[in-house]
Length: 556
Image (cartoon, rainbow, N blue to C red; front, side, top):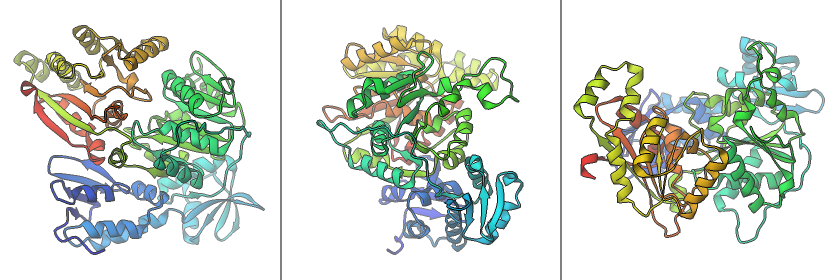
């Protein structure tokens, strides 16, 4: 297909792509570049994307080739694409798989190079020191199995990501089947499972509310092996348990919970990231990992055949380090966004695996599996005395002052009144602010200090319609199933976290019984750093095709 005359995209030699938002083909172009380019900035008229090696390698692992990427760039570009950039794209994508980890019948785990010069470069690098063994031939070197994950990390940093073809242990067999009474996997869920199993390990990216848990359950059923499921918190663990009991043939006795409250190890064990990262008293930095983090022994407690990482973008550093030693186990990462605010996307790529499947949010919405959503940024002004306090505050205090401004309280009250009768979540970062809002709204509040039993009781009351408004802290950002919620009002966030914004919108995207839309508000204090952080938070959702309407609080 030839280049679009006066196309929506400007491709620049510095690897940036400029997309004209108002162009008739902007949406088609956005969908085409999303698999391999990351949105960096999303102002009103022109969105800026960037091509990165990791983005191109993830696209390559997910089945996209350089020819397809080049075709998209050429087809939508308004001007001729710089030839040097096209060459760079092709060469970058060709780097994935030039090195392969293979299980050799004679020598065991080996690193095989399709290019002898690349192997020579790698073997001479300080990054791989101690990871490689004897030379087998000019293109092959042995690797100790314990170094499989660490070597993949090093190779990604060197720019030579290895394709891991060394296979996996089957683990302890355990019969698991999907229950088929009255439901079936959606087409994209089947595709996600197929893509994961074909690759052996990797990440499935699906929108919030699109049924990532069912993808995990189906992967377990197809693998028929003991499974360790890692989740964000105890509420999420119990939601996983309930879903597995409802959707599979697993019984209560076959599913264990390993959390702060319970330490059950069963054929399917669901553990929280928090308990895995609890440190033993007196375990200094120089101690072995097992001595510092005693619960990491769970990874060796059974011969696991599959490890599922829910919300993989939140994976803590100690679990990354343990995962480096688990490369012979199949690993499935589930997430709505591969964005990590700590920049460790490369660790996910090398240790969990590359992206195997990615379904754009708007595509799933178009199929009717998640609700359409309108996003509104409500801007308000600080009164004069608060503006002076903000202006004279220390820089590290300014965001708190702007985010928790008392001027937001009457705005929240008006929004709740506007949507009376619609199940509404009021979401924020700062506990004092949330307790104040709860008092004004006469609504219960859930924070990290709320017991698991009380959280479950309040969530159940919200689902039943007995509690119309729920005020929640960041504990509700992840893995909380509240399908009835249709309105979310965000009053403060974790600075400029893109992943948090996506997860908060995700709380209200479950399809509505009446087919109605979800409504997401974010309250922003103008002329403050709150505005800067809001624009950064919105980047990922803009990449997915959501647009924020900006309105003044006085016009509500």
